[in-house]
Image (cartoon, rainbow, N blue to C red; front, top):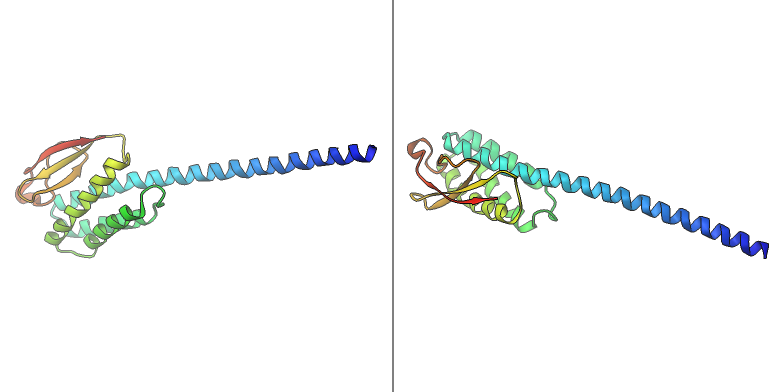
Length: 173
């Protein structure tokens, strides 16, 4: 009988130890996953800021800056987990920004920016990128949209030649 009690007691301690280790691993994994998600959310928000930087470079007629900012956009987009943004969406953004980064021809960059803007708009409607308003703006001459952090029109498709051409069509939140 004593042997049975000793065996039962050892079994209880062993079981408790195994469950405690499992809980510890689960909590560590949860914290690790939470940190990864927070990092990915930061990167997603950073995508919007980098998109704004590309837009601002085009507004300023600066092809070199647009190319450099697009390269940063690509680097950040490559670091985002497909659980946060689908692989298809990331690949579309990478294609658009990658092509902008590869050219120093501002006219070509502006044409490519229209696709990047459409894909960023789709992303902004699907995922909360910021707590601040995001303004969708439209250029009737180009028949293309872009996103801006401010209501004031600064047209990236024509830069200084038609800086204020356009209108706000929607506010995304």
